[in-house]
Amino acid sequence: MISALMLLIMVGTIGGCSLGVMAGKLLLGDPKKTAAFKQATGTDLTKGEHTLLIICTAPHGIQSEFPSVQIDIVDRMSRKLDTQGVKVVSSDDVATWYDDHGEWGDFNELAKAFDADFLMHVELTKFTCRVPDAENLLQGSTEGRIRIRRVAKAGPGQVSDVFDKGFQLEFPTTYPVPKENRSEEQFRQMFLDRLSLHLSQYLYDHRMSETVH
Image (tube, rainbow, N blue to C red):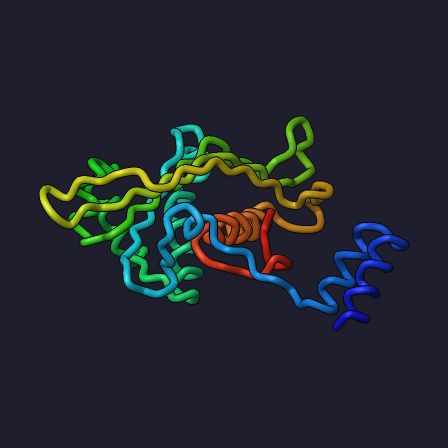
């Protein structure tokens, strides 16, 4: 073990930081990153002891260009979190609620209707798949906030904020994709998958190498 640690120190000193990180993975493995929500609240949603309701909102400008973006994100997040053991209210039921009411309405009423313990509100403020002033290039860019509220089971079912985090994401991070390489619809689906994974990772522990930035 001492020899291994000495080797790690030597590689990090001689070969630079990136080589040191690679050597660390070889010797120590790929460490897990604790979910930001668990760090903030002490609650591990992957144990399946609490029910999570996810909603997504976006301003009119985003909705007019991407009419299904809110439900698309909720659906993708729900499926991903379900594989991690998180007890999530059915995205189909959430979509039906939205269709019936035309808006999310009061969060107290919404959470009570689904008997949820936590309500996760993904609030998009920016969502685009195009590069400004470059019609032939595609690059996803989004910004927004995640707000998670705990629902009190006693009394009138009041909600209280327990997690609040801003987010932003670009995809791909290196350079835009020419439209001749991929259709805009295909690209949009890939970007939604990437964004939904990024948002989901706030709620479950995952390998450092799997983190979506």
